[in-house]
Picture 1 (spheres, helix red, strand yellow):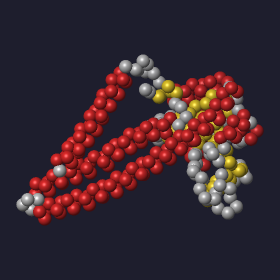
Picture 2: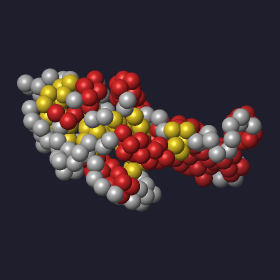
Picture 3: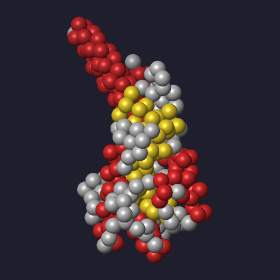
Picture 4: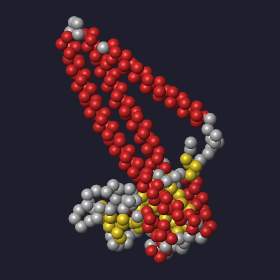
Length: 313
C-alpha cells in the first residue's frame, strides 16, 4: 500500500514540476526574443487552423494528464481510507474499494472517449490545414505574373469589424484580372455510389454531387465571403469592384456541368481560371463593374496587408 502512495505522489510531483518549469522557461525565452515587441508577420496559409492545432495539442496534453492523474489520485485516496477502516469496518472498506473500482472504470471510459474525440478533431483540423497549404502552393505560381496573394484574411461585418463575426477568408488573390475570394474545403473521400467515381465531385451550378450524396457544403460560405469582401472594399474605396467567389477542393477532380455564382475547382485549375477570369466568370457584385487599375489594386493590397499583418511571436 505504501508503494502505491509513493508512486502516486511521485507522479503528481513529477508532472507538477515539469509543468511549472515549462511555463517559467517559456516566459524567460519570450523575454529574450531578438525581435522588437511590435513585430507583426503576415498571416500564412491556414493560420487560424495552425493556431487551433496548437490549442488542441495543449488540450490533448491536459486531458491526457487529467485522465491519468485524477482517477489514480482519487482511487489512491479511497485505498488509503479503506485501509484505515478495514480493521474496524471491513464491510465498509470493501465497499469503498468496489466503488472506487467502478469509479475508476467510469473515469477510464469517459476519459478515453474524450481523448478519442479530441484526437479525431485534431486529425480533421490538420487535414484542413494541409488542404489550405496545398491551395496556397498553387496560388504562389501567380505571383510571377504580378498577382498578390493573402492567406487566412480576417473577415467580419462590412465595416471590417472581425470581432462581431469571427471568420476568415482562406485566400484572397488580387491582380490584373480582378479580385478573388477563395474558400478551401478539404473533405475525406467516402464509399462511392453506383455510377460515381470515388475521387470526383460534380457541380451543376447550384449543387455539389459527391460519390456518396449531394449537398451545398461550402457554396453558401464561399458566396458570403466574397460578398463580405466586396462590401468591405466598397466601404474602403467608395465604389464597387468585381469580386469572384471560388470554392476549391484539394485532392478532388471537379466535373462542371453548369455555372453559378460560385466557381468550383481543384487547386491545379485555379491559377488558369484566375488568369482567364474575365472571359470565364461573371462578377459577383454587378457583372458590369470595370476591373480595378493598378493604383486601386495597390490600395486594396495595402488594406488587406494591414488586416493580415497580425501574427505575433
